[in-house]
Length: 219
Image (tube, rainbow, N blue to C red):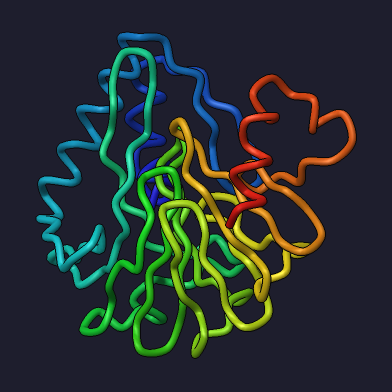
């Protein structure tokens, strides 16, 4: 959706004297504070005109029948609500061509990262400063995929992190996790982890890790 909006506003922004450079097929924009507020006003106006309405769990539909996943573009002086209407899959596949809105629901997670599903697919989303990154998640085994907590999910073959996705070296059969002092830690038969990162070598000397390892070993 961001690409679509930027292209729609190209002429208007030129009229404001905004510096615009071409990157691929989409203009990139260099805003100062006042220009960014004008940009925000235009995006907000377009969103109102499109009459976005929530279906559920961050999935929206507008008056044109487009499906969008909500996110926020964050700048120092403003925050803009954005709707991602196409997948970033190289083909700009519309969400409405893939997502089954009747069965779409959130499995677990937070703005940091979350997983969703419908009757056909698992989906992955995480926030960026440019808005949401929402994708169909082919790395998951649909039938056995299960969310453990706000940081991890597993299926019969893999462990998955809520923000960073596939943890390809983690063993799902022996994987166990722990929430301690506002962070998630985990272990399997081969490694210890802090969030998605393996703790090896000098990592095991990080301040505070000596408290965590015995707790993980008790799991």
